[in-house]
Length: 238
Image (tube, rainbow, N blue to C red; front, side, top):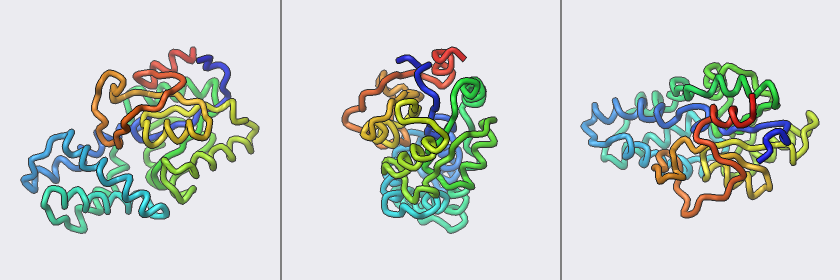
């Protein structure tokens, strides 16, 4: 792929820029230990993956922090535990503690020297604002599920982002969508005809686990694949 052909990069945030799996486990593991739940990192992430997308699709106009509270109740039920309101609320507010990947801020700063940068994120504006502070750049475009009143893989957030980029003079063919999740991002972006770049942080191409991401029977084809955002920035020559 000729990366110089693009004028704008749109990013998934959680899984691509923010290490949401570590954040999720950091929030869930202490609770599991207190409750005597025998669940390791893969089991906790699998429980999350079972419920998050369903709750998002059932509640497309619900803020992500509130969706997380519903998901927490589902996870607790899976392990036979009755959650408290305080525990559910704490999990809903945990996004602010999810760490950025070590390479994210530097890579974004480098990429911003060449491209306009946008995000298409499955969270609410307040949650994204707390994550953006860890990424060190100001994005040219921000579309959240709260803005679109829909969660990916619904096409509405992508369509809103495309409209926003068009308004600042960036055409469809000049946009590259950069993401980790085949389910949330790569497949729906491709269905719209967008060029796609896979940041395979989970090592799925080499047999890695799907973690907090719903599994697909077949991974969608992509235009380019890199293991990290730093490797992608290197390939872009910035």
